[in-house]
Length: 634
Image (cartoon, one colour):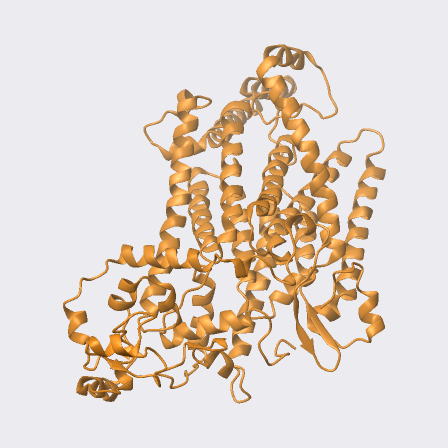
């Protein structure tokens, strides 16, 4: 029932306007970048939507912002345009689930915990709600999750250098798409930067050090050769010379495989062919150069995409529209033209007063009166839907001799207007706003999307069980991680030599030192959890600096990073349980039972609050039973 309701819901009133204006070509200004709205406009054109014949819409009225009526027309009974755009959001929602599974796999998770991450994405009510409507948020969430996935893949040491470069390029592309949907993706930029920095530091300075953790990834060629030699000598004593020759061949093949494996460990430095990886590995020069290369590749591609979408935005909007009121005078005069057919252009050429085809051209200024307007030789027309004071003759000749605005100037003016439109006292307070510290447990107000007869409500409530579990895992892990990082830093600075010497003498520990690269080793979990926790806190705590009104769906980027954190945490618990010497089977069973129990209560929460997602009718008592917090009401 994605077609219900067949009317505008919440912010669909904005995004349907903007998307239809890409179809009609009327210039507008929005506080968000254009990518998601461009995709929606492409869907409208792909399904064959024909805009209304509104060449002279009333952009501003006494009642506020009106503009063209196409955003209402797409919901009419004889049109299903709105339905196809909502289907587009549903497809993006499905892609979000797939991206979460891929991100979990690249984070080192087993299939079961990766499925757990994707499952949590499916059973969140707010993701389901936004995936059914014409809203840009689900596009942001999908690109954000895809960015996490390819960013994690770009630093996997098991990949070849060419694969890493490809994933760095994909990281830049996904990051550019994220920031081109909403500026709140700034937290995604921070997550990518922190992950790349941590991976570089670890690979250059701590990958083969016992200081970092008790379990490390190291290839000891001599030790592996000794193992092969001992096995081959024991076999040769009881076999023929032919078998001895075969063992030598096996030994050579093994040495080649070990060498190839070690080369892959130092693969990132091959980005610069002139660098000799064995000389630069573990040095500040190698660290800085590799960092500069990766940062330039990722941020360069992201920046190119970001400005490319703005160029497309300007190209699609050549005509006068709502946005002219936010732009500098030069932009409105020299970058926009009226939307006229040949007949209307001919009428404009005739001139005279009044002449509705020339009303697009302002001959005065906002507060000009009749006397000053006529003194300028212009037409004063209070019946005009555009400007009251306009030229009596077609001023096209003024445009022909006017200075041309460069593309960069247009982009700067547009970005300036976007920022200006996002300011003002009217944006500081909203009756359904909530603050960042209320989001993890949804202890603030939720957005009321509307009613569906006879007694249904649609509200932007996420799955309270899921949100609570994510917060209960991420917040304690973040506090512990802050203490652990401080403790490790102390050991690095003041006690490095002593710790390394004592660690080398230890014969055993809680984890076996098999000196082999283990997919589920503790360093991988430590680094991964650090990155994801930074992504979690970095995507909602900075909202403390935002004075304007905010809503609970601004927490979703943090929640998605938190979902991935929970999946990695449970994967680590399974690994720890598997390494237990005495009660391994019982611990593993307990972790899996805990995992399935959490999935069960999340599913119960999803279905319990699903009526508020789809707008199903409930009695007043049933609505009241779902208000676990007093602010969860319209």
